[in-house]
Length: 107
Image (cartoon, rainbow, N blue to C red; front, side, top):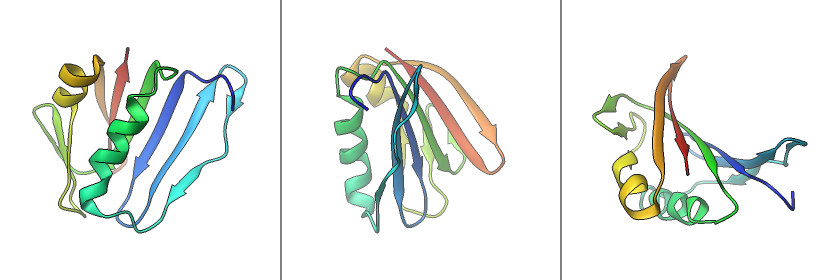
């Protein structure tokens, strides 16, 4: 998708999936199979640092602790404060959808 504004991310126990969206629709999903715990945050930072991305939805299984998601099936913490301080994102909301904690971000 050449012109996009939103990033959709689902971080699971084995794979990390992401896609781009705009008013015209959603791109094909990209699947990063067997991504290591150490590479999840690095990959997420790279995706969020793209200047074309204006909104992001990040889903991960785990409880919210302050502005962090502590994943239950990995030794990974998704830190929203990092996104705010280092990448100039705004935290809009945290939502529980089923067993997924979803973080909504906006530039």
